[in-house]
Amino acid sequence: MKDLKKLIEAAWDDRTLLNEKATINCIEKVIAMIDEGQLRCAEPTEEGWKVNEWVKKAVVLYFPIRKMETIEIGPFEFHDKMALKANYAKKGVRVVPHAIARYGSYVSKGVIMMPSYINIGAYVDEGTMVDTWATVGSCAQVGKNVHLSGGVGLGGVLEPLQASPVIIEDNCFIGSRCIVVEGVHVEKEAVLGANVVLTKSTKIIDVTQKEAITYRGKVPARSVVIPGSYTKQFEAGEYQVPCALIIGQRKESTDKKTSLNQVLRDFEVAV
Image 1: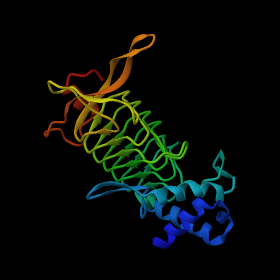
Image 2: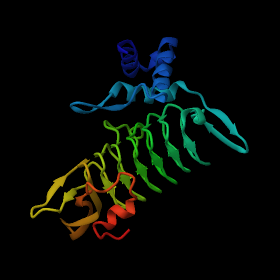
Image 3: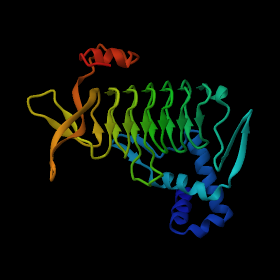
Image 4: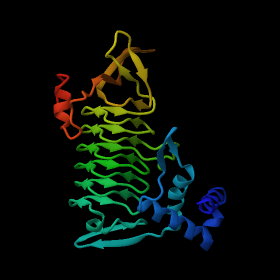
């Protein structure tokens, strides 16, 4: 692994090395390991999540060593540099037309892909539902038994290049049309109601106590979150700015398989 990392870092600093066979083989090996779940762009450790910067660099470097080609699948045609994942039956993954996952993403057994998209470098763990028109961006990390509802967008790190991937931990519910970008970290068993938008600078305000607590870039475990707004003063006057509101915690009695609607109704929130 140290040898792979050394070659990737060298090629990152000197792109002329991308013409050398040893570098090309190294990049291809790293991408193959990501595809099989043997390497991750970010991974949980005892100290917290660790971003493997060199693995992310390998994903970026994979693009310039690939050539455009035409891919024909039945009556459909694509023209791209990236191959698509294959052997879903062997992997134990259900894939509904027109779901797409690029080669170099990891999709674990028991995952259900409705018509959706999973980009290179992403990691989707077992039992997760990627619902209709949901997008898992490059290098995003999605845990076990997560439900990404219809139209969810998890941002990637490649365009533009960003430091930290989006992380969605185990047993989270991400409601319809939610957007999570810029490396935001959603901790275990959290619930995001429909249309929550989280960026690195979005205020995530816990309003369950007498004094509000504000987070940025992280949703605490088991939090129930809905869209909100707060008043901000500008030169032209006061205006409402979007934020996210933590309105409670998932109850211990809430089964991890319970629908998003039921969890939100516990807090008398319209779905």
